[in-house]
Length: 340
Image (tube, rainbow, N blue to C red; front, side, top):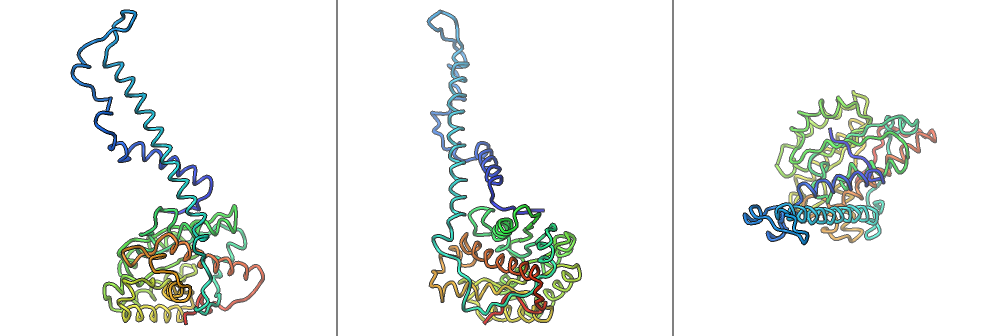
């Protein structure tokens, strides 16, 4: 089971050690050392013939060469380790200033009414342990992010831990690239329900658009899955397809899936995050270029896209907790977002 944790100081130290160890063992930088610098491999002459120091004592050339090679290898490894640490620092800095370059604004063109996430919000308000499962395909898995720390589940975990320091919050990533409802339903029980989550964020429908899957069959499976998750006592947030060139070029398919997911959310009284409308606002209303939040494949989000998605989703979870603490009774059928 993969579980993402926030990118805090302790995680940074672990990341440094892990990246450094990985670089020292497997980094292609070692293969880039010129053949003439590979002192550990000695010539046949060096292996066979001794030399003498000034005192006249005999010193095997091989031993001397090995010692020199070991010293140079150690220095090279220290250099590689330093580069690995610098890389981790660079990644950490990128995580910290990503919104300074382009701010993540709450969407204005999407009518947004906070709904109820009663189970997870009540547990967070009471300081009880919470498990959130991010269920979906490649954009849940994090394809397009520059490091695991920058996937949306890990970004969400970091935000919730900042808001509730010391709380026992797990955000478990159950994304698997290339899947849609048929494949996800086969692992729903073992990878989601059996983990006893308090909240399931289910991203579904993008691959149905791309693969021309029957929307009615997709709808039946998603509705059945939502029903089973609710029966297990968890809150549900559905996430619709992303606004990106590969999806918008199949506009008819995308619109069918988006309408279907909204209908299921209304019927089952669960929340929905209209990712398509939110991302479209980034481009059309906030004038953010597509390539500022979608990678070159025209489909998957980049670090900024995942970060803003996670931020907006986390804001809603935090607001739901605030409502619970204030004793505000929000009807369960009021969804997290209402698309235009």
